[in-house]
Length: 115
Length: 112
Image 1: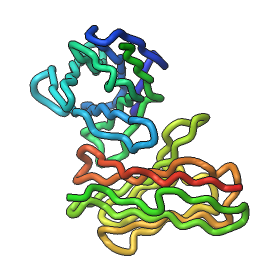
Image 2 (image 1 turned 180 degrees about the vertical axis):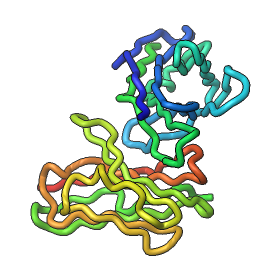
Image 3 (image 1 turned 120 degrees about the horizontal axis):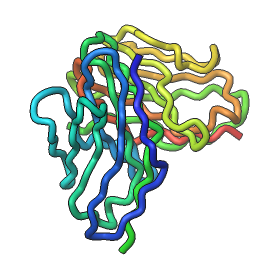
């Protein structure tokens, strides 16, 4: 079984401040982790992924995420948020050791960056 | 590459009518996923295919829903008959061997 939890429905930050969106996961084997962003009236856009290697993963638009195996977390971060980062963010996971390609998505976190 | 293509982008229909949503995968991708997104239920996986074969349709809400992949690059999702509670945004996504999924722009379905 695999699942993702995004404990915050909403995150509000001021432009220029650091942004963190939290994600914890549960898988039986090794995790394959993803972050997606969804702007209004658009499809989900892939931001970054982790499968193995360096625990700090860099992705699009200046975002990065840190994989922490002991805490089963994969938090998304951006050092300096922009108003244009306001969107809905989804974390997703699947079990690498499974032949099932289904992703389990979190419920999403709405990020609002105020000017 | 044009990315995942979905049509139509908007569909408004009356209860009882048949609705067909279409999806063209990214060239070379071998997995296809259909999702539905609503405010109440969030993002739900309806069905997915690997190499044109349906693998898991446990998310399909009822027999009114059916999906096909007549070839490696194209899929349809059909609702017959449609009901107001089917109103949602329907996304398809494709991936290569379980990697990141690339989503289409979605079809916004309104059933009156």
